[in-house]
Length: 129
Image 1 (cartoon, rainbow, N blue to C red):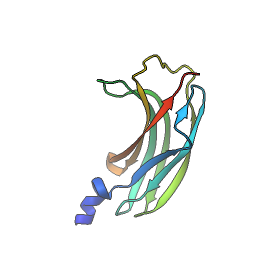
Image 2: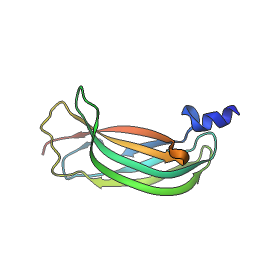
Image 3: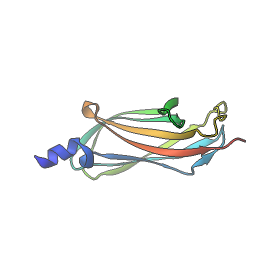
Image 4: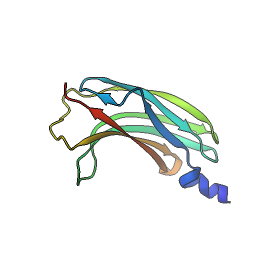
C-alpha cells in the first residue's frame, strides 16, 4: 500500500529532465536538447509532455512568453524505465530583453493520468546580439 501511495506522490512519481546542448543563446538561435524521462516506483500512463518559455522578473510570478512544445502521448512508462525524446525550437528574434533583471527559463511538465504532474525548470541565458 505504501508503494501505491508513493506512485502518486513525490518520490514515487516519474521524473522529467530537459537536458540542453548549451545554456546561453541569442534571439533567433535554435535551442536543442532532449527530454529525459525516468519511471517511478510503479507503471504510470503518460498523457503529454509540455514545455514553455517563461520570464521571471524580481518580485513577480513567472509569466508565459511562448508555449514551446506539447507532445501528446498515451504510453505506459514502466518502473525505473528511462527514455529520451529530442527537443528543439527557435528562440524568437522579437524577445524583449530590455529588463536586465529578468531571467528566462524553460518549464517542462510531464502530465500523467488523472492530471498528476511532475516538472523541471531549466534557466537559459539570452544575450543581446
